[in-house]
Structure formats: C-alpha cells, structure tokens
Image (cartoon, rainbow, N blue to C red; front, top):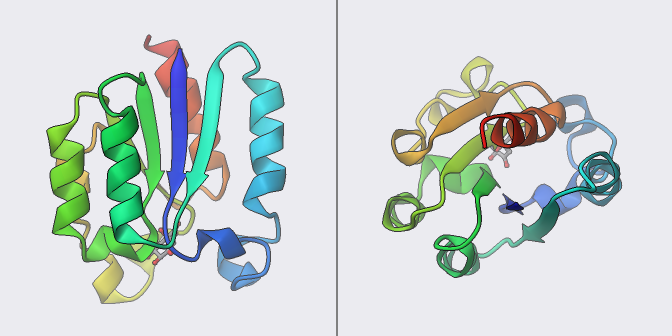
Length: 140
Ligand code: DQA
C-alpha cells in the first residue's frame, strides 16, 4: 500500500508557527513517529509552499497511490486549481486540518476541496493525519 501526506504553505513552519494553534512539534518529528507506527506500508511526505508544485505532486501520485492525505493550508480556502487536480485523479484524497477551521475566522470556513475529497478530518491536531491513515489501512 502506498500513501502520501502532502502539506501545503507554511506547514513547513510547524513547531515554530503560532504554537498555540498548531502545537510545538515539527512535522518531520511527527512523520518519523508515523513511519515507525505504519512501517508495513509505503508512507511518503511532501511539502511545498507553491500551489503548482502541490498540483504537480497530486498528478504524479494520483493514478498509482492508494491514498493522498492533504493539508493544503490556506490554499484550501482559495484554490479551485487544487480542487480540479483532486477531481482529475483516481486516488482518493482525505482533507486534514490541524486546527478547527470552523472555530476560526470566517474566511477559513469555506473549503474548495471538501466537495472532491473522500473524507475530512478537522481540528484534531496532528492526530488527524494518523486517524486518516488508520482509516485508509482499515478500509483497504
Ligand atoms: C490549516 C488551516 C488553514 O486555514 C491555514 O491556512 C493553515 C493550516 C490547518 O491545518 O489547521 O495553514 O490548514
């Protein structure tokens, strides 16, 4: 089984960025824990601050991988192009947000991606990625 976690803009700053909202772990530390926990699957991580690079990665893996776990950061609220990329590929995409976007500013309440994602995990901290992975493996 092949699964990729894709993180969008500013998520490279996890651990340093607004720790009261996003926590104090870096994603790299957390990803190492996930790799150990799910050592029986092929698990990959990609991060970019650039919309087109996120789209290219979705195209690259989206006809081959079993699942994409995507936190598109602020592009969630703005990017029709990422929504189109998700709709264009075969691999199911799970939308993750570390924070509860519905308890935050109004502009974060709109997701262009949810409509084309298979499932959504919101506000469960970094554990949202783990829970998405658990679901993917459990339902395979
Ligand atoms: C986020 C929520 C977005 O609104 C924000 O722009 C992010 C992170 C989250 O994981 O909670 O960058 O996707």
